[in-house]
Length: 92
Image 1 (cartoon, rainbow, N blue to C red):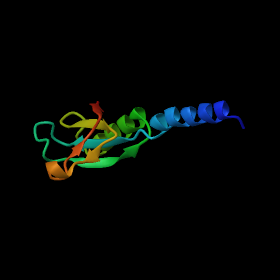
Image 2: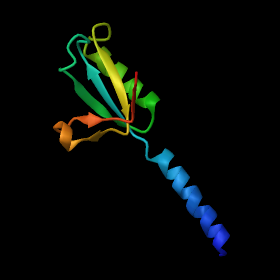
Image 3: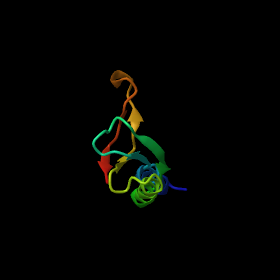
């Protein structure tokens, strides 16, 4: 294999790995006025899946009207924040 093909393949893998590695963490809040009470509902490969499970969880809890949810992209715990997770972005 010539070096140009190897470079092209390596660049393609690097570009795709950023897309493949995205993870969405879902959280529900049964009472939207008290965000200290929350439940992690899973980690998902798409925002749509995260939303579906979060809304379904709120519905099963009887908190669809009183609760809220968020989905965070590529969240990681930060030691300097006491283990609090920080996400690249959050969506609803």
